Image (cartoon, rainbow, N blue to C red):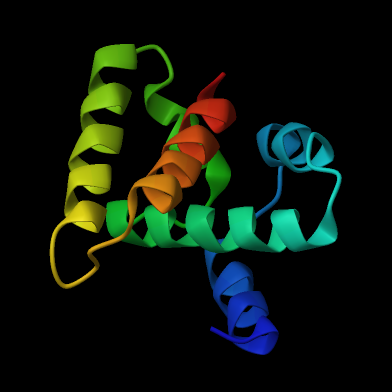
Length: 100
């Protein structure tokens, strides 16, 4: 996905708010931030949410969030995605760090 497509997707999904700012401020490299934003947008699209704050609506239900993350990572592992182990670890880290 190109940078322009990523920015368009981010605009549709609205990556902003205090939770997102805390998450984004912890990332030093612009390239890493771009990769993390892309992965976060894919996760938000999978869950049919438009804002990062919508992701945090169930913050008081850690088992529910854990189940959502596991289901999504398993989905990424299987065809047609078939992501490799390291990529899955990166995705898992992104989602867990957002909720921490």
